[in-house]
Image (cartoon, rainbow, N blue to C red; front, side, top):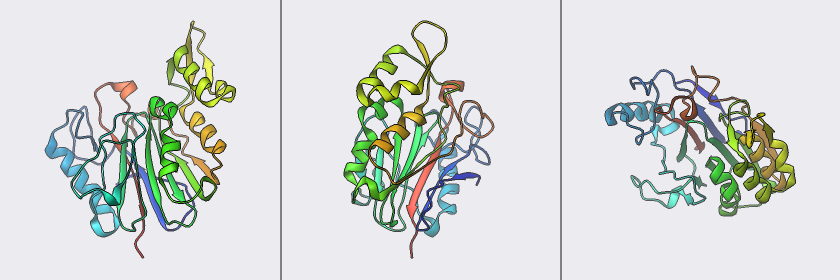
Length: 247
């Protein structure tokens, strides 16, 4: 399975975002689609999830979420196996448990304690990011922000993410004047190109995250590697998966 490893620099943490190739789904979900809510055949999604499970230590099934662009966070190790909670972030301090979020333009974020004693995954669309999904996740995990590292996975880039003036204003009101630098006018009235990962980085740095890295990959531009809802409409979903490696 082809993946982009999360550059988080912690030997106890394994995390990555999958690419769209070498799966079982047919057009328009070709081929490694993990989304069971996008219209793909359930049997194909199961085969893809089986492929993912078989690449993980212990052959564990990732704990999935029902994502709604909100700020709810769950402790995955407290959720009964087989349940899929409604939330946009999850975390665990249990070695050997895999947690996952799905994306197709939204920003996946991996957070981890610098001692490798907890890990979290976050689904950050612009609504969730503006509403505080990063802050909610960091409030839920053990330790302080200065004892965490973060990795920003593939997402729609500032080359492709056109938004209206109301989105820009929302972030300026939420993050302060510094957020304005993450929006560049397209030349059309009230239209801007937004840097989603840049906005997340601003907030993470303000919160005192000790280390931050960015995949710098645009899901819209790189069609061979990534699903993109903005580009294709009906499409599959990548998975960003993280776990504390068992000893």
